[in-house]
Length: 365
Ligand SMILES: *Cc1c(COP(=O)(O)O)cnc(C)c1O
Image (cartoon, rainbow, N blue to C red):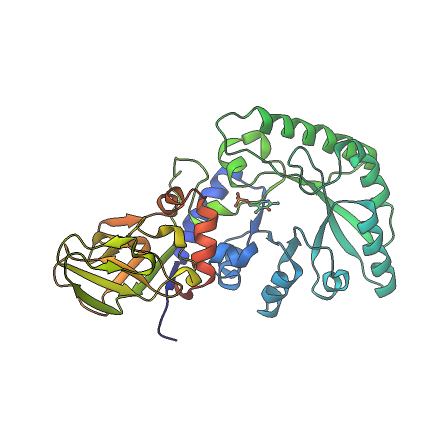
C-alpha cells in the first residue's frame, strides 16, 4: 500500500527514554505499558526493544493484546491491566491478571485447580481514581482471602493516580498515603512482601515517594511528558505522507466541504492523502499546520475522510510527491503532539494513539 500516512518510529529514542526512566527508578522493576498497540507505536517492536533494554514486565489492557505479543515469540511476564473476561486465555498465554475483587479471584482459582496450573495475580486498590479496584477498607481482608485460594499466588498490589500530573499534589499525596498504609497492613497480615506499584509517568517524574518496588511508565517511554517540561524525553513518532496533487486556484475559490475556507489570493493548494480516517482529527480543519520543505504551512478547509488540503502558496518549488510531516521534525521545524493536542483540546496520548495506530510503520534503529 503506497498511500496514507507512514509512522516513522525511532527506536533509539525509545532506548534514550528508557534510560531516563532507569536513572530515576534505579533498580526497581519497570512494568512497561504497551497497551493500545504501544500507544500506536506497534506493541511487538516496542516490547522487543524494551525487553532488550531491561524492563521486567509488559502491561497491556486486554488479553487480545497480550496474545499478539506472545504470538511474536516474546516470553516476558505480561500484566493484563483491565481484562478479566477470558480466564482460560490467562492460563493459555501465561499472563498475570490485575484483579479487583474476591469473586474474580475465585474464578481464576477454579480454573487453576481445573487445569492443574498456578497463576500469579496482582490486586488493585482504588485509592481515589474511582475506576477499578477494591476499596481500601476491604483490601486487607480481600488480600488475605485471595492469597488463601488454591492455585493463586498474590504477587503484587497496585493502585493508580487520578491526577499526579496536576501542580496541586494534595490529592495525589492522599492517594499515596492510603496505598502506603493499606500495603503495609497487607504485608504484615501475610507476613511477606508483595511487589507494590503505583507510579505512571507523572508519578515517576514528580513523586519520588511513589516509586515503591515497581513503576508503570507509558507516555514517557514514547517521548512525551505529562507536564510542560520535557525532562529531556525524545518523541519516537514522526507522521509523514507525500503530496498527492497540487492545484492552482484563483482568488475567491472555496476549498473542501462546507466552503469554510476561500482563497484570498491566487493560491497553490496541495492535496495530501491523509484524513480523519487515518487519525488526523477533523477538528484540525483550518486549525493546524504541517511541514513541507522545512516550512510550516496551514491546513485549509475541512479535513476530509482520506484527504486534507494545505496552502503551499508561500513555499517555493513544491512538487507532487514532496514529503509532508504532520507530526515530528522536518528541517529545523517541529510539530509536537503537545502542539496538536492543545489545538483540539485533548492530550498527547490521544494524538499519538490515533495517528500511530492507523499508519503504516517504519522502524528506525
Ligand atoms: C495507561 C496506564 C499507565 C501508564 O500511564 P502513563 O501516564 O502513560 O505513564 C499506568 N498504569 C495504568 C493502570 C494505566 O492504565
